[in-house]
Image (cartoon, rainbow, N blue to C red; front, side, top):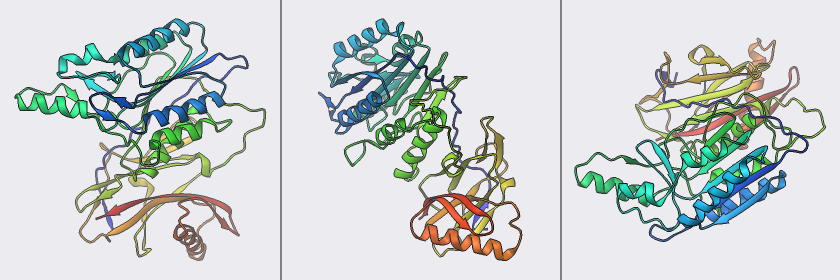
Length: 403
């Protein structure tokens, strides 16, 4: 097969559950957008992102405090106000767009007046994420969204300074993993220790996806955040992947209606293929979440439309306990996909379709693959195929480039 099977880079998702909304639920959101940094230049989209997300929270019944370009004193006051209000809330949400930094494994949100001329200034001139999380521990349900891992001149300068002085850098790019307590969800716009995109169209990819999916009714937040992750990875061609950290046990819905939910197999699937570009010797990672009703048939499709099956036994399979299975090739497994010299260069696609029961005849498979090829050629990477003998067949594919 065109991609040899061995170890892959991992994509680890946490399955989240958040508490259901009560009819008279008291909801509050603190939304901060820091763009006008005094010593680090302007971060163009952070303010726009905060406005977009604030409007989405308001539409979902949150009282919103939307604050922009906060200096250290103003950020401290916003945190104090949240702590005082926390005991009266059923649900609290915090969204921060701006610069963040990690030092010694701890995360700090950076006000617009910070200069951070040395690592010792980090604790003095910033707001510790620990303090924010501590304030939220009083709230039954709390959600934290950190779009704060963008290209960061503060981190770059401090890392360069410590390196030039022959010292070990205790400041790193991006944010560090956190440990949540109680019913708290913390979402990073990208993986810990990684950098997120500020975006080229007025908003960051994460803010656009979050604001869009928050408004989806009757969608439990674990499913909602999978869709956010999928959209961000699609837009950034696998270069940015949000991550959620939580120990929550129950369910939370931004919006519940009285309508009975319908079963949509395609909407319940998730596919992540990363990185977006690879060379000979590099690995492709694949993760798919599918409902129990779907028996996925995985394929790799080359630019010349050559299809190569990837047997499901090459995937680690886990029952997520929420009506879904996860198929994953990741570190620690026996297999992976590594690009070989003979692999076709250009835009390849990996994905799956939910194989219908009774699909045994070669002619039926050929018919289904032809219908799939037509859909993909039209740029429809996810949806359903119409198969006369089998009804609608859900499928989902993602692009990657072999250079």
